[in-house]
Amino acid sequence: MNQEPTTLYKLIVLYILDRVNLTLTTTQIGDFILEKEYTNFLTLQSVISELVETGLAESRTLLNRTQLRITEEGRKTLSYFENRISDAIKLDIREYFRDHRIELRNESAIQTSYYKLVNGEYEAQLVAKEKNVDLVNLRICVPTEELAVSMCHNWQKKHKEIYQYLTEQLF
Image (cartoon, rainbow, N blue to C red; front, side, top):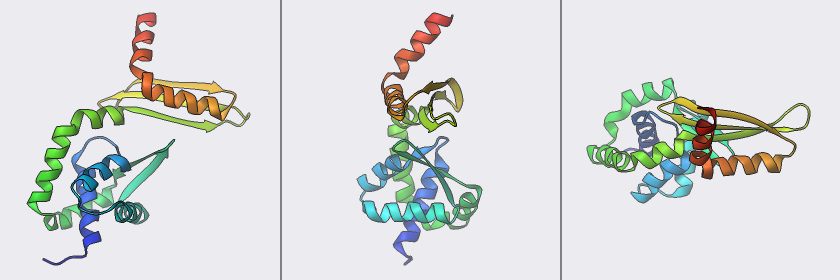
């Protein structure tokens, strides 16, 4: 069956997003697609943008990470056209996520964001999740954007130690 390649790439991205129960970043999706050499980086970025623009996927950017998730409209579309994805590609996807499940879950479980408050200060939000349940959800006000960014980066690196310290101190 001859189909437009970008249609297949869109279906592959939707299939990936539909098969995981966590939010994936564009980097995580790109790692798989580029490793398998299905397409190049620029085409993949265009495909992701089109999926978001048409409402088949949603994106949100936190610091330098863009996270994607499939929408209900994306699920419906995938259900109509999933048969256009070859069994070999579906197997590649299942094997990749089976082999990388733990690292993908760990990357998605630690979330950070910050924003400017009305008083001019910044609030950093630091979250650690397990199975979509917040283990820790901290909101900390700081005077500058640089401090908020630093807190977010350090949370990515030191969340385990901080969580352990908090539980030791509070229990």
